[in-house]
Each structure stands twice: as structure tokens, then as C-alpha cells.
Image 1 (cartoon, rainbow, N blue to C red):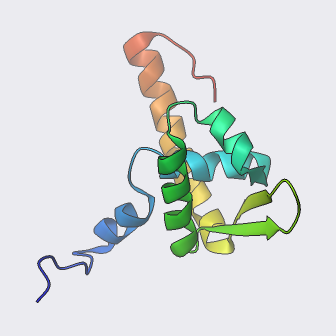
Image 2 (image 1 turned 45 degrees about the vertical axis):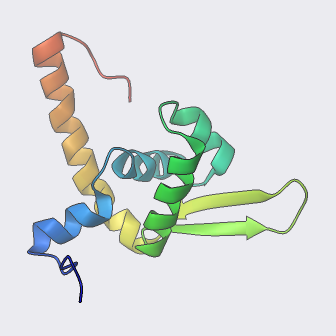
Length: 115
């Protein structure tokens, strides 16, 4: 018997299960800005994430078909991440949230965002 129902309660619940959390939206946005990012580049950009959490979040985004992971068979290992077509569909919404946050940051703190 399952303890928790994993079926989304509604469309908003479904969306936030896929892109919610502290890092997913940022990872999608950064990959969008660069088109392709390697794991090490993501580590440099996301200074507040542990390697374990970055790996886990990337696996979840890949499982949800929002990013594509390409592994090259070479030494040292090389892995690249790109947005899938489904992931690209989210970018206008993430950009809208970014624009909203830009306005709020300026109102509340008087600072211009740096993204």
C-alpha cells in the first residue's frame, strides 16, 4: 500500500513538481543562456549547491525530459547538458518570472539584477 499519492493534484502541482525547488529553474535558465553547459561549468555558476545536490537535480531534470545529457567516452570524462524541446517551452515562463523578480528587487532593495 502506498503511503502518498504521487499523482499531481492539478496542473500547477504537476508543473511545480517538475521545475520547483531551489535549483531547477536556475539550471534551466543558465543552460538556456549558454545553449550547452558542462557539469563543471554548472558547478562554477551555482556556487551555493553541493555536488551531490547538483547531480541529483540534473538527474531529475533529465528524467523529466527537460534537459538532455550527452556523455563523451573520453578521459577525463566530458558531459554536456542541453535543453530539450520540452525544456525550451518553459523558458518564456521562467523569463516572465525573472522580469517580475527584477521589478520586485528594484522596488524592495533598490538594486538592479545582474542576470
